[in-house]
Image (cartoon, rainbow, N blue to C red; front, side, top):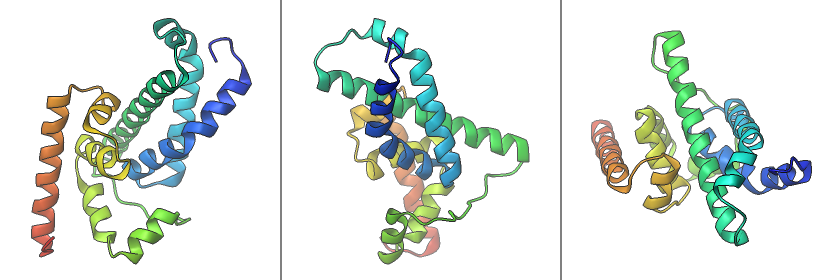
Length: 179
């Protein structure tokens, strides 16, 4: 990709777009916004590829894929947080939860399992806490990878995750949900 090979970009998109879209969608609650975020992340990858390649010379394929995956997750998470903050600043109100016009499989599974309220409570969390929950529980990233995706040290991430869990517990208790 550093050599500007379009096939390398197509391969990166094919490999990473699905997981990145899930992260962005879970962060924003909007499929179209998630697509825009993933496209922006891929554009940044294309623009930063020479610098990334210089910083991380080609080594083993699995290690370089892992670094690229972490970098892309960090970019998508930060873009989602930025867009949520911008939307709140522009409107002056909290970002409303918007229904997705085209339900995805995981939405149908959540509805079947009765977890719609969980999603609403996660969407109500502050952006960084929501990112910690999404990366840890929805994307099954280990704390170290999730911390790297959020550009945090592990202790700060675990503290953020602890606050997010406490916030969810309080929200469930306020709903009278005994989970």
